[in-house]
Amino acid sequence: MRGEKLLYGEWLEIWLEDYVRPVEKERTYNNYKDVIRLRLKPVFGNCEINALDVGEIQHYITGLLESGNLRTGKPLSANSIRLIFSVFRNSLRRAYNIGYAERYIGDKLELPKVTSEEVVCFTESEQKRIEEEIARLLKKKSCRHKLNGIVICLHTGLRIGELLALEWDDIDFENALMTISKTCRDGKDENGNYKKIVDRPKTYSSRRVIPLPNSLLELLREMKAESKSNFVISDAKGNTVRVRSFQRSYELLLKRLGIPHKKFHALRHTFATRANERAMDDKTLSEVLGHKSPVITLRLYVHSLLDHKRKMMEIVNG
Image (cartoon, rainbow, N blue to C red; front, side, top):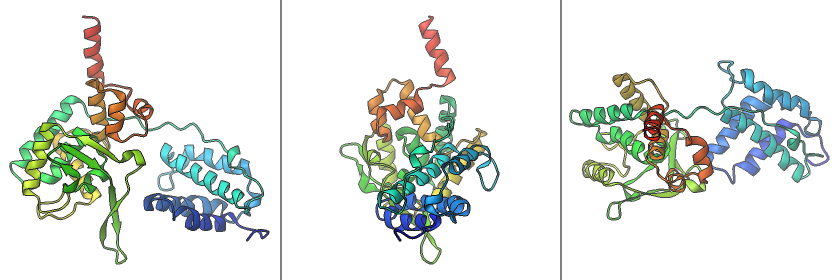
């Protein structure tokens, strides 16, 4: 196609299949595919690649801050804007590098200043109520594994995909260690039936080994004795648990307790905040969470909750 007029939409399809799919995780590929289908092709797909205008692209990206959500018309999240920006720059860079574009204009684009969502976590009081309610429910219902998954996340900081991909072979009971080497998400097979898609973890640093405290080790021993599945989290019959189903159980638990709704990821934030409050060093916390570096951990969790601040102020001014 070199020397011929190439539409940006045509190039995006080539780039996606020949340069993204072979090297990226399936989830990344699907995210890029959605961005191309829903965002870039409808607006820039019919534009010849060498006629793309930096100003028009920048105007489009900046406009996402105001009304980027196709369904609600509200601003897009910071991560969504970064994803769209990344697809623009990476696709344009590859086109230039292999000779499909006469110049590289991606370096002239500016990512708008976007505000990431505030880190939200549970107070110590809320966390205590959650764990006490789970303990109470487990005495009445045969749903130990599902509900105990919430407790595991509160005390390890696992992401939901990491939790539901966790298998008993990943638990070293003798040495009290938990190995995180995979994640999962909901998907469908060729017939449209539910399928658990197990994949590599989010990043290389997400592969990690977490030492287990005695209380959590004992809980896992009890769960394994009752388990009918290879997965740590399963239903009473040993069936695999969907991500959305697990999220729903979590949401119903909060509703039962009258605790304001927080995303499931708040469990991970809660673990990190408790660790921060109890003076776990930054490097250790970073490794337990599977962050690339302590800098990321500090940026996210440098705050502490108001109750903890009050206690610290009392100590300082005691």
